[in-house]
Amino acid sequence: MTHPEGTVPWLFDLGRWIGRVPFAWQFRLRVRGRDRVPLSGGVVVVANHSSMSDGPILFGVLPRRVTFLIKQEMFAGVVGTLLRKIGQIPVNRSGADRTALTSALSVLKAGGVVGIFPEGTRGEGDVSSAQNGAAWLAKTSGAVVLPVACRGTYRAKGWRPRVDVLIGEPFHLPEGKGRAALGVATEQVRDRLATLVAELDGQRASEGRR
Picture (tube, helix red, strand yellow):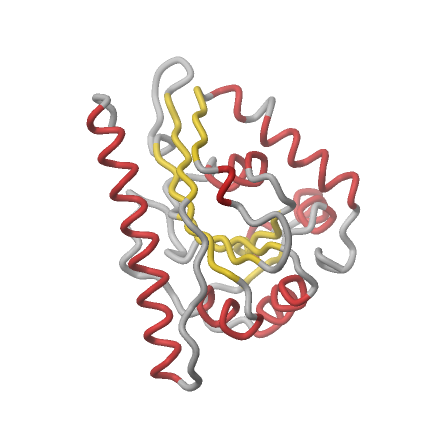
């Protein structure tokens, strides 16, 4: 299956619609590069993380069902049940979570899409602390990596502030095994995402936006 066990497909699609329409309505959302999203095959989406709004927005606007790795603290009570039913995976951020990575790997090998915010924490969206998880998943599954930049949600103020999503070009990681090869792949993921975020920041600055 291209989504984790226990997923309810119609709820998955309902959740995407909520992220794309009623949730996103609070922003003036501009999405560029949708045509760059591969329409089949395994894809690892890596995105910067500026606020809690980034996840629902990307969940809704990307043209394929995306299984995100989400901190396990969110999987409590009714919310946790719903997150599982819409195909999301809890991850323990205190260390390498083999259960979460195994579940994500299964999705990718089945030709699905897995989304990761490699920074692990929210803030201004600096991607310098990208972790090995995204690169490991892409290399192990053979999936392509798709960088996505999102800006405008951090401390958003005013009536329907502008939020921009820029989808970059998908790319394959270099071949090679071992820790050194994984380090090189991780640096490539970090660089591609950082470059895309900088590109979007430049576009927004030219328009007088932060």
